[in-house]
Length: 290
DNA sequence: TTCCAGAATC
DNA sequence: GATTCGGGAA
Image 1 (cartoon, helix red, strand yellow):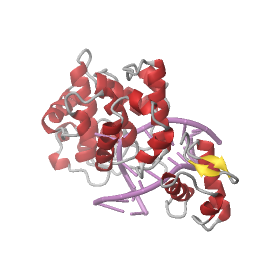
Image 2 (cartoon, rainbow, N blue to C red):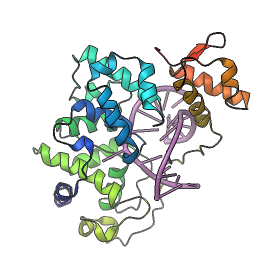
Image 3 (tube, rainbow, N blue to C red):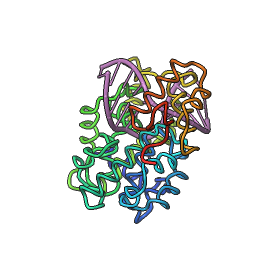
Image 4 (cartoon, rainbow, N blue to C red):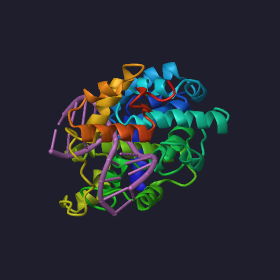
C-alpha cells in the first residue's frame, strides 16, 4: 500500500537517533525502555534508561537485586508500580525463559506490566516480528490519514490492532518494522495532537483528513485525567519519596507528610495493597524486599 | 491546562 | 467500558 510504503520510506530517512534504536541495543534494553515510556515522554526516559541499563544490563542482574532497589532507581519517573512490575518481569524471565527476553507476543503478554502495546513493541522493535504496534501516536495517524477524523477518540484495542495490521506489508518484516516505528514517529513529531504540521507531512497527499478539508472531530473523547494537585496520586507520590530516601519510615513520620488523615491513610493503604510498601503502624514502613 | 511510546482493575 | 495510577514540561 502506498500509505505504508511512504511512511516506511520517510522513517528510514528521518528516524531520530534514540538509544533503543542503536544497532546492537539488547532486547532487554528495548523492554526496559518501553516500560519507562509508558505515559512518559521520551526526553524524560533517556537518562534514566542509561543509568538503569548500566546497573542492570540483563534480566538476571535485576532479578538478583531487590525490588526496593528497583523502586529507588526508578526515582521520580512516575507510576512506580512499573518499577515493581519490571523487577517481577525480570524474575519471570530469569525463571521461565532462561534469562532471555522472549520474542513471542503471548509470552510477553504473560509478563507483569506488559500489555497489548508493550508486548508488540518489544516483539517488533527488538526481534523484528511483523506484528501491529499501536500507541497513542499511531492511533492518531490512522484516525486522520485513514479514517479522515481529526482525533482518535478512546482506545479500542481490537479495532486499533486490526487497522494497523491492515497497513503492514506481508512477508517483509523489516518494512513492517519501519511502518510501525514510522507511524509512531510521525504522530509524535509531525502529526501531533495539538498543532499538526501538515505542510511538512510526508503523507499529506494520501491523508483522508486533509482530503476532507480537516473536519473538526465531534466523536467521543478519551477520558480526561483528574487534576493532580490534591489527588491521591500526589499523596502516594509524597509517601513514596519518603520511602525511597530512608530505610524505614515510622507511622508518625507518615502523618507529617499530608494533613488530611483520611486521604493520607487511603494513599498508604493503596501503596501497601500494591506492594510498593510493606510494614504496619508498629514497625513502620519500608520498600518491599529491602 | 493538557498531554505524554499504557496497564491493571474495577 | 470507566477508573486509577506520577510527575514534569509546554
